[in-house]
Amino acid sequence: MTSTLGEGYVRGRWQHALGDGRIQCDLCPRLCRLHDGQRAFCFVRERVGDAIYLSSYGRATGFCIDPIEKKPLHHFHPGTSVLSFGTAGCNLGCKFCQNWDISKAKEIEKLSDRASPAEVAEAAKREGCKSVAFTYNDPVIFAEYAIDCANECRARGIETVAVTAGYITPEARRDFFSVMSAVNVDLKAFDPEFYRKLCNAELAPVLDTLTWLRHETNVWVEVTTLLIPGHNDSIEEVDRLCTWFVKELGPDVPLHFSAFHPDFKLLDVPPTPPATCQRAREQALAHGIRYVYSGNIEDVAGGSTRCPGCHALLIERDWYELLAYRLKGNHCVECGAEIAGRFSAEGVQNAWGRRRQRVVIR
Image 1 (cartoon, rainbow, N blue to C red):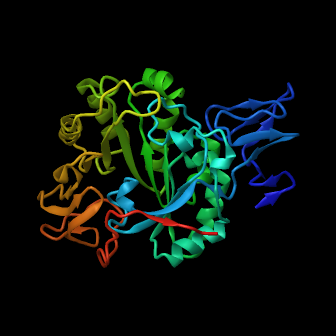
Image 2: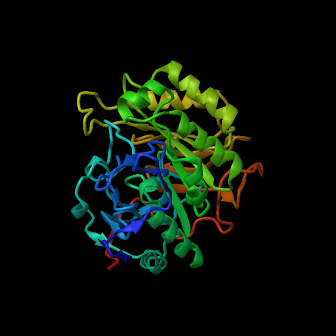
């Protein structure tokens, strides 16, 4: 889509004028207030004249086909492929960002691939993808593009996935999540001070988004927490997170604990020991969360799905590859217990595996 400002510019949907001449962006809790010519914290929203524009519409850092387990989503059509893409910029300032080369990019030139929403949906259909994921950086900041892509996908029977930090206003989230089939929310920690110091953000809006998603929408929800040694991996903090999780989200929302590796501005922190992820997983299971996974480590047991009733092994995973699949629709083949999630009635046909495939759309 091209405006009079050039390729990639579209007027933002969530904004209003202030009495002092500035315009406020109402997309995320930062509520950036901009003078003419200023960019928002996320970098891709810019005030030009009397409005704020998204400057990255239709432009991406690249398109790849991934396994859905990489998002990570373990209870949303396991074994299927997902067309994944992101843009530049982010509305958080995480010092430990694992995708900092694109999320912290300050050059639109990073966005080397072009695709209209219809082209994205057609590519997914052509490649046999079950879904399209808005990922790599946070799709909240390119919400207009993501929403239009999602509408084109839905018209072709393609599911849509948002991988997000959940940092979005109540006004914008209604529009954004109304077109999403599934979401993985990155809950960075369960400590407001962690969010302020290491993410330049606030915890409360993320928790509010999570509870709203769980109780006010039909979107399938999974949650990921990256465990960083010495920062958010203590027994006490994991206990607080799990207590809140069960109370506010319930026991059937899958929770993923992922291992950190040194990156961006947190190079002085060691990688997360596998034992830390495994211990956090055991804590969460002890709290009554039924589906808990460990990620970014070699742990077949921690990546596999067991029946919460009879504890039969239902989906065995080695990283992103399915080794066994023993569900009949949404039910355990052993005891018949219902397993929370979105599973195909016919099971897994031609599982995608762990490979990653680059796609050129235009």
